[in-house]
Image (tube, rainbow, N blue to C red; front, side, top):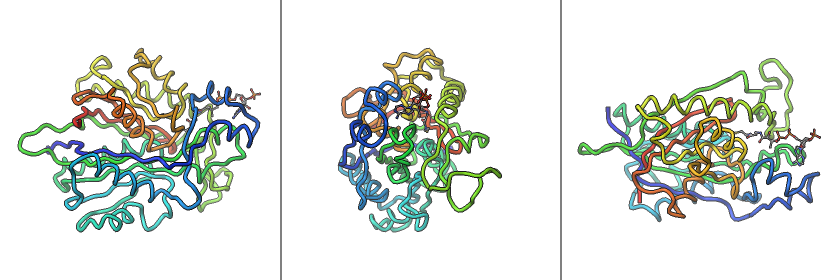
Amino acid sequence: MIEAKITAFGTNVPNKRIDNDFYEKLIDTTDEWIVSRTGIKTRYHTTDTEFTSDLCEAAIKDMLSRYPVTLEAVDMIIVATVTPDQPMPAMSCVMQLKFNIPHTGAIDIFAACAGFAYGLTLAKGLIAAGTHKKVIVLAAETLSKITDFEDRTSCILFGDGAGVVIVEAAQNGEKGNIGACLTGSYGEGGPDLYMSGLAPNLYGAEIKRNRKIVQNGKKVFKWAINTVSKEIPRLLAMDGLTIDDIDWFVPHSANMRILEGISSELKVPMSKFLESITNFGNTSSASIPLALNQALKSNIVKKGDKMVFFGFGGGLTYAGNVVTWGLD
Ligand code: COA
């Protein structure tokens, strides 16, 4: 099997900063409630003229400025997003055009907040199969555009952002750094977190058709803690690892209290968790790269550190990866 390694990394968030006092003026809430129930202090939203493709483009430019990689030989672009500028052309095709990549496949995936971990899993699979050698995995969201600002239980959560990696085939006996990957789903929980599309019903039941995020926060909250804390040990066992072998746990940053619940179930201190919820809110598929970026910028994560990425969200879906960080 051909091994896969991450050779470059970048992120982007839009400029417009939205602090909690924005919501105090909009709905019946307080900064104190938002911070204590979610951990969020601020997040960033796109303007009316900025879209997911802009965040993707900026994240790729950030990556190219930080690592000595080129895009010519990229043979697949995967974009994980539930907020594409439009359903077609796909965001991956838009990036093929923007960066003039000559011979590449292009596909968008809908795995909601698990999108980045799913994208890495797919990239590793394409490389292991020998069909592809250099894959861009982007995770980018403009959740502010599908947020129901009249729903005080959800509108305070969401932010916009993007992250990107290049995954390449390891060469000349070099070891890869994407280890075990695990994927799962729980369709029964679909109605607990959805956005309407063409159909008037979901599993036969009528739904809110406002094309905004609708969620049963309490149910998703419990499911997330149970699922992630059960599945992380299973993921590690696939690589013969245990909790003690891991330097950094990077679950999707959905809510600080979800991370605290996972930390308590796994009996791992919160100091071993990387998060992006405090400064960026819930950015869905982009939250794992944004958490990693903060940790890299403050020199917390070092080359050789072992990490677990674990995404979970709408679908309901989940996916995890064991990654040994290999970049400076
Ligand atoms: N400001 C002030 N009060 C609020 C509020 C807000 N923005 N939103 C809800 N409340 C109130 C509720 O009305 C309720 O009042 P009541 O007790 O008088 O009925 C009280 O706060 C508690 O509400 P509850 O829904 O139980 O809060 P919670 O602790 O479950 O937190 C979420 C709500 C949404 C923050 C939390 O459930 C959550 O984060 N869930 C997971 C969501 C998620 O991660 N989704 C994406 C997954 S990828």
